[in-house]
Image (cartoon, rainbow, N blue to C red):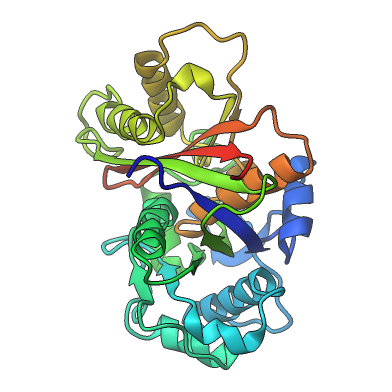
Length: 341
């Protein structure tokens, strides 16, 4: 839908390095990381390290997901009168079906539990998007439809996820995918929540999403097939076409990459296949180096970091490529631009 940008109005973040968006984004900017020992032991006899969110009580499971999401949403809607919250649709991003150790009740119980935490019932257009790491960009596409169809002037996008359960960690450990002293080709698991309030552009100090694209990669991380980055390449091309620009028009990339060589290789291959003009620099940011692999929350995190970097003028530029990838092969990309209508 060219010519239909949506603006990020406000953000909320709950991470291992900060329990608010300003705190978390400042820590990520400073490259601060805060991994701690979990209560789970690996096959090497060492405690598994992870990025854990410190809350006032040791909540676990779906209860902790709801608590973290409520905190992020309350921060995001801080400037919105509480009596108006019920008119805002909530698109809730959660782990994809089939992810190892996925908690029960994410699609039918988590949203009502979050509403109960906040003491509000969101608009009837609310729903759950169980697409894992690509959920946030999928939610941007759904929000754009609602906003430009006149169904809602603003949409709330939230995400909450945690990989810190033994059914999840044990699978990734057996597959040698966890970062450890004897394995550099892995990620450090984490948990987080985030929220974005989006609407039509109104000011020149807003981060806009101007293009969105999706695709599927057949040679996903577990396929055993040779990687050519066909899926990510197609997603990026679709987002660029939607935004009406070329890759060389952009200033840097920000992604959900959390440490595994497969995803760095994929990003490099996609860049080589899409970039048609030489650029002196085209940096790649990956906030997961500070907050860990946070699943469905990673997409919200990279968008919140982008918005903070633009507002505080430490971004390498005003035009950004964001992309995310699921282990199952689903790929998403978004073109971001700082500067409203």
